[in-house]
Image (tube, rainbow, N blue to C red; front, side):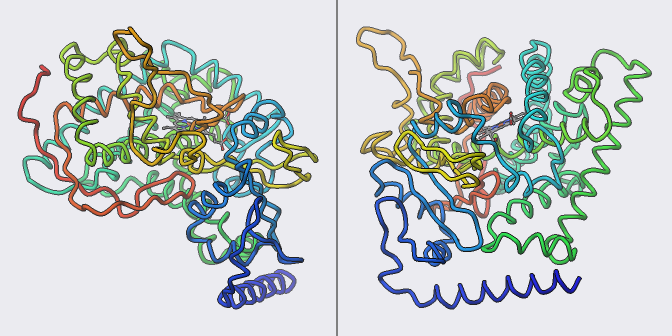
Length: 506
Ligand code: HEM
């Protein structure tokens, strides 16, 4: 105990020294080199890093624009060196060509390990590849697609639309981000567990699993922002402060999910209808997984699928409220399809809506950065030297804002950039874009397994909601983008809902 306390005090001392030093901001400290912020002996770039801690997205983006190969290197005191890249060739090398040299690594999996255990999202090597094989198999099944579509339809028609109708009739402002988060949590729990948390019933207290998940995800993500890495480990060992709250939240998640797993096993033994066998949990149990292994697997899916789609849709609704011409074009595409009933076939036709979603995620990616840790020394295609243990980050947020990748108009919301304008073609066709230039779903062997499900969900919700309602933002200021584990809009998206005057749907 005394040893741990000494380490803790030492860490606090180092932090105080760094804070004092960083307050003496000299011009020199702000200087940058072509490959990142200026580094000093011993302390590396720690001072500039600390100065920019609360605006890392913007700082990295600025530095990357100055770097000839859009790759920077940031050595830090008490932490491993970070290499950040917005270079598609480097991204391809990390995520695909030399995939096995860039696992998530222990420093990353430690952050989420208490919550996610050995689930797919948080493991490397054999533990990952065996779960990935099963997940890819399960996600390619038509039956899962049909089941998740039924879940989606039911949740939109019976939950989301009534909530929006009530808000419209009461003339009340609602936080659309919060509504979409609740919606996405319901959907992901129904698909993953076959269990309904009913989060869109706003008259009920917040669901304990949803609340515990939020707390656990937020505190786990904040571990990564500690200036000295060891600090959260010491707090965890002492079970104090945020680590104490994290431990309680994780316990709640584990207990509640384990109860659901037990109940599911019982219902499968009794053989309660085909319905009960459609969700991911039933499929993983049927494949022979059990105990903590199956609990961790489903927790990973809830984690991966819960806030990502809602974040993308929240930013798209805001962007549409600022770009009336784009919204009109989207409605031109959606209205005739809605009157046909918006099934799978109609969703495939929604290429303009897909372009709007991609454009929103280019500017506001739900996962703004993602890090790997080099297993061995390496050299990236642009010549950047990587040392064993270095943190190597690909950076979708910065990549979406590079002029050399998207042109001078990179900061405009322009869904038209996603189309090929082939002369003579009657219908614009979405053009293929390299996933290494646009890695919002990651790319390579570890590409998001729920990508197609996510597009299905987002197209359906955006089409269905916009064809029925006008969304009017209450606050006219530009909202702030907060990265954390999954990005969100600071303060939510306050909107007023109006029924649309002309409705072409049934
Ligand atoms: C707009 C929506 C989504 C975005 C932008 C997104 C993005 C991503 C990204 C960037 C990763 C890589 C994370 C990492 O390795 O650290 C990932 C992995 C993953 N995603 Fe998604 N995701 C979305 C929706 C979903 C949904 C709806 C599901 C399923 C219900 C899902 C399931 C997964 C799983 C299981 C992984 C881990 C894959 C592996 O490690 O092999 N995602 N996603």
